[in-house]
Amino acid sequence: MKTILCYGDSLTWGYDAGSAGRHAFADRWPSRLAEGLGAGHVIVAEGLNGRTTAFDDNTSASERNGARTLPMLLGSHQPIDLVVILLGTNDLKRHTGGGRAFESRIGMERLVEIVQTFPYHRGMSVPKILIVAPPSFVATDDPDFTLLFSHAIEESQRLPAALALVAEEYGCDVFDASEVCETTPLDGVHLDAENTRRLGDALVEPVGAILARD
Image 1: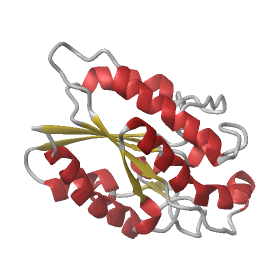
Image 2: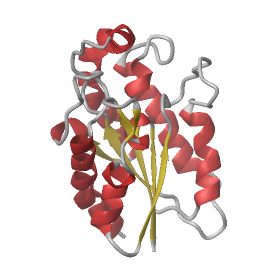
Image 3: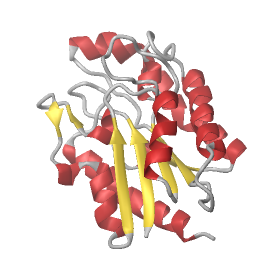
């Protein structure tokens, strides 16, 4: 049995910009990944709206700093074979990560360090890591999301290169979500049902290959 922890924000939670609700369970990318991998795989979907890599957001009742909550999840779900991290979108808010891909890069470095140095239970190995760069933003007519993210459209396009540097330095795998899916112009940052399904389907092959390694 292989256990995969999918650690992310609203893209992993399954936020639906059309309804301001949540995509059906079967449409969320972790669910599609589970279906594609089949028997012998357990997917732990840990998505939270607004989650950052390693930055505080005191506007929320939930703890959105990913570096604070990740150790608890590593401890509660171990043994874990693979951690898939899809974060960085919310680092591009000016009131959290500062609005630049560089901050997302250093935040991702912290998350990778946490996974690689966590004191796992005796006999349990360190999980492999797959960093998924979030899909690039697009322009939107939504007034709130325009105020929140329009300054960061170009920065979102820099995320794949920035996160690839982290993967290279720490010996992780990396996947660029923009190669297989597009954000919706309804709000400029989230995925509609079709595109979140596309992401989950596209991750089946690389995740399977990573798990097959010794």
